[in-house]
Image 1 (spheres, one colour):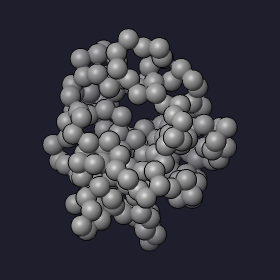
Image 2 (cartoon, one colour):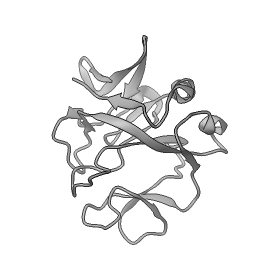
Image 3 (cartoon, one colour):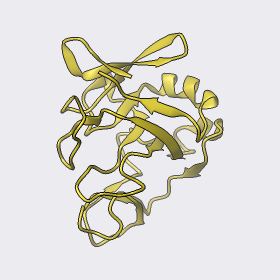
Image 4 (tube, rainbow, N blue to C red):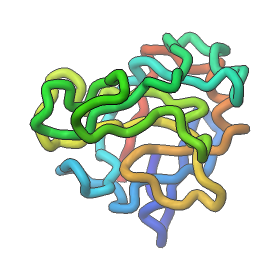
Length: 168
């Protein structure tokens, strides 16, 4: 994955010999990622697992990535001082969190990348996902996002051994 020339919040994802457009973080690609900077980490990140909405994206299980359905109580903690920082949580949850079951459908398929997972460092960024893009590939908060059609095409090729490499 690399940024699109002239637009650091959009990029190109290469899978084999095929190149797909993608959205990147509003902060572009940064080597020194921090919570809230909106940047996509300059890193090689393994796909750990994923979540999907069976009611919106029934093909979410067509992959070798371990997938779980997104229920109404699934959240992701984004508070650096919380003991569950950068981990899934059951909502309602006391600390600030992101709701995984979204009305905008961005997380109808959402793959968890291993950014700041083990070890977790407070403030180094949370919830770096590979998910669905908004129309026009508007910027993410630091994630990588593709169209639903591209995701459906990629999912059967992915596994928990797949590495997403973000380069400059």
